[in-house]
Image 1: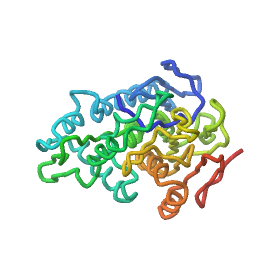
Image 2: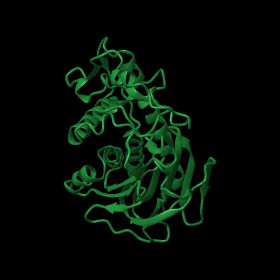
Image 3: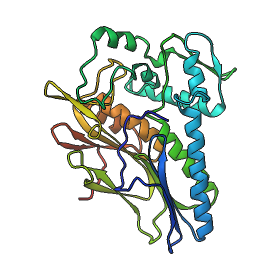
Length: 330
C-alpha cells in the first residue's frame, strides 16, 4: 500500500466497491487501491467496451501499486530501499523513468518535492491527536538521509542506488498521478474517447460525459467535510488537490499538516489545500505536494512560471488564492 501525502477526493463519492453500467453507455468501477478511494469511468458507444475498459484500467492501477509500493516486500521499490548504502538495484524501465522524472521535479522545486522524504516516515504519526514534536536530534538524523542528490541512477545498467544506509524512497507524492495517467493511456488505446480516472484525489478527465457536457469537478471545502467551495469544468486535463484538513494535529494551538517539508523534517504550515490544474496527472500530483511545501508566495511564483499549469490555494486564514488564469465556478 502506498503511504500518500493525502489527496482529497475531488468528487463527493461513496467508499463501497461497486461496478455499474448506465443506459447512457457509461461504465464506472469504484473501490480502494493504493490505500485510497479510486473511481474509473468510461463513456463509449458500446456498454461491453466501456465495462471492459474500466476493468483493464483497474488491473493496470493494481499492477502499478505492486511496482511502486515500498511496503510490498516483492516490489522493486522495496528492493531499492533494502539495499540502501549496500549496492545498486537493477529495475524495470518503467520504474527507472519514474524515478528520473521525480528527480527532475525535485530540481525544479529546489527540493520541495523529494521521493527520498520516506526516511522521515516513522517520525510523525498524524493519526495520534496527542502527537508531540519529535526531538530535534531525531529529526536532524532522519533529514540527514534525505536528498534527491543522493539517489544515483546508472542509465547504462538501469540501476538505482541510494548512497546511504537509512535512505528510503516513496512515491506518495507522485504515484497516484502516475497510475491515473497510465490508466487513461490504456483506456484511450482501447478507443475510450471520454472518461475519467479519480485516483484518490488525483483526477484526470478527457472528452465529455455521456450527455455531452464537460466533467464538473468540485473542490473540497477545507472547513466543512463533504462540501465544496467551488467547481471546475474539465474536458481534457488533470485536477489534483493536496489538503491537510483530514489529517492534521494541533500542538500548542498551532495547526500542523501531515505533509512534511523534506528539507527540514518538520510539518508544513500556512496552507489548508493546494489544487493544481494541468494536462498531466503525474505532474499535477507532484506539484500539489511541492506547492504545499513551498508555501503561498514561492508556490504561486513557481506555478505562474510554468506553461499550462494553474493553482488554487486555500490558506490557513481561509483566503482563496489563484494563479493567473483560473476560472472558478461558485
